Amino acid sequence: MKNIVAGNWKSNKLLHEAMELMNEVKSGLSDTLSTEVIIAPPAPYLSVMTGQAGETLQVASQQCSATGSGAFTGEFTSAMLASCNINWVIIGHSERRQGYGETNDAVRDKLYAALDSGLHVLLCCGESLEVRESGAHFDWVQNQLSHALEGLSNEAMDGVVVAYEPIWAIGTGKTASSQQAQEMHAFIRTWLTNRFDQATAQACRILYGGSCKPSNADELFAQPDVNGGLIGGASLKAADFLAIVAAAEKH
Ligand code: PGA
Image: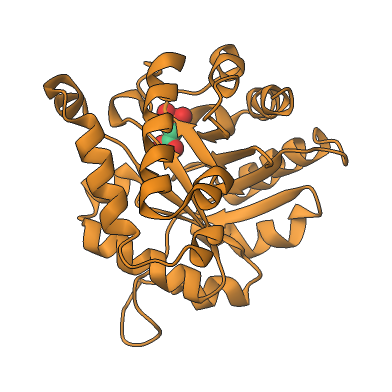
């Protein structure tokens, strides 16, 4: 199973800056990588970035709509992404759940729409500090995943990568310890085994996200159930992002 390192650029960089960053990342990647490297630039740049990406780099959208085409001003569909040769989409990021009212139902609908269009999904889950301090973090994550994956077949799980991103670690500089990450990832894998089957759970990549950086990536990726990372802030500097990819290559 290949590790994945995905850079979520969020709402950062103007086009010329994004192109520069993309070129720096691309030129720092070897052709013989065993890690899958993905970048998720802002939506207006997706097509340009896909044209530039080449063989070693893949491009993801940071979201997509739950609907098909129609009178939905401002939205873009998963089929549109697929028609632009974009193969990945991030769904259920906590910033969209918290800031744009994406409910568990909306996350499930978007996931189904994306898989129907043949996209691969990076499905985000993770608890707030309040939930963690109350001790309900496992229940919380289980509830998010069971909603998002409701009714999904084992075969369809081939298109899904899970990203565990504790909200208290996102953009805060406060990373989950490698033990905390492993504990939750193992919990998710066991849950996937019970919900689907062992082969499906073993084949599913589970990424960690939340203040992952060159100084902690190695320890996080060394955990048996951590199969790479979803990287925010550190993906905006090519050297840092490439150092995280190098850490993933070691495991
Ligand atoms: P961060 O963001 O690495 O800046 O904490 C991670 C994410 O939101 O995907």
